Amino acid sequence: MTQLEAARAGNITKEMEEVAHSEGKTPEDIMRHLAAGRLVIPNNINRKARLVGIGEGLRTKVNASIGTSPDIINVDDEIDKALAAEEAGADVLMELSTGGDLDAIRKKVLSASNLSIGSVPLYQAFKEAIDRYKDPNKLTDDLLFDVIERQLADGISFMAVHCSINRLTIERLHRQGYRHGGLVSRGGAYMVGWMEANGRENPLYEHFDRVVELMKKYDAVLSLGNGLRAGAIHDSLDRAQVQELLISCELAEIGQDMGCQMMCEGPGHLPLEDIEANVKLQKRMSNGAPFYVLGPLTTDVAAGYDHISAAIGAAEAARYGADLICYVTPAEHLALPNKEDVIEGVRAARVATHAGDLVKLKNTGRDLAMAHARRDLDWDAQFKNSLFPERAEEIRASRSPEKPETCTMCGSFCSLDNVNDYFKESLKAGKKEKGVCL
Ligand code: SF4
Image (cartoon, rainbow, N blue to C red; front, side):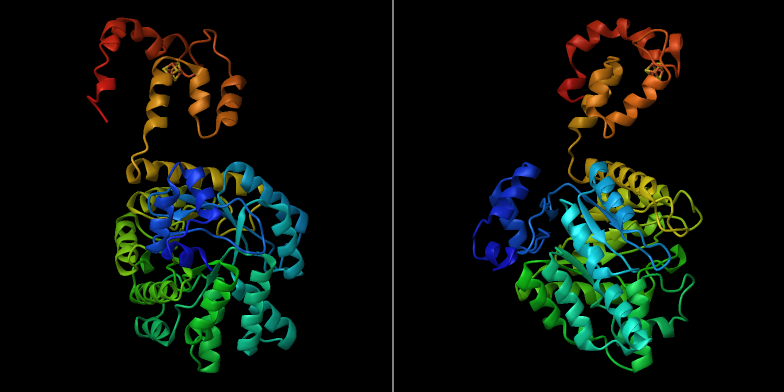
């Protein structure tokens, strides 16, 4: 029985209890949202991982993606990145290797990490078609489904599968004159090429029920991959993207009706003004299925700082209801990320999701505590409430002030140190604490 089937039968599983405990919710809350298809728990009956819930009422989660490329194959580095991502606060991990022995790499990452791990099976399927037949377009349905099952059997908990690309979505691409930024999803591009070369429907769409049954067998989450996501802000909300999103939402409902935990994936690159519409469209058309966005990057010209471009978009997306954010690293569009890039990417995404959750969940207590700590020049409390206490302490310690209450930014010009005394009595009256603001 899957988590969704259990929830719909009114059963609280130990997985639901674990998520409820970590989120400060009741197991009944988790069960209710799961049953409604608005919350998922990436899981796999073959692997014990630190479980998280993704969806309604919960903190927005951060995914970090790691994995080899055909050009850089160093498994130890990928394990280091996986562990660094976990240490930096990633909630889930995607193992997206495309170079080397993919089965062996996946097994090593799965055994090294405590996190729930996702994958994109099309990468391995097309790589094996190239290895066997020297041609990705010779990929067979059997090989494709064999790869999906192999990855699930190893313990993959959520899988981005590009089921929502079909002949209609490709027709939109042709009719609209392709795209400013081309196709940027690796799996999506290979699948579109395969469909065009073979003149066939996408087997993942055609045999969607087979995909769903495999996910159900392992209690994994089927995440409907965004193969035609916009890779340039000028392609945002174009007809091809909207067509794929519409099909994703339709499939999410069908998959849930079959008892499978479902999630939809979204862009990509979006100007700020399109983010709200993207999230609302997905939520409305899928009856609130969890939404996993990649970034979204809010400008195309920030190479080297794309983690910031994406964090701006992620904060907006989380604010309007996105449930899982895929981090972007400073190496985006430039190179395979190294360990430092991974850490920066996770941290930027955590700032973004926290900012979004302040609006979405109204959980502002930590920020209020920080405001008071800053006002009172209470440095211990400032570090305690910081998202990154070690980094904060390290910076302060590297430039010690003459007067320990202050910092070297202003020193004797410290505005708080100079004025707080005049407001001691007003502070005691406690009007702010009674809700004059926020
Ligand atoms: S010295 Fe300036 S920056 Fe530092 S705590 Fe005081 S007001 Fe803030």
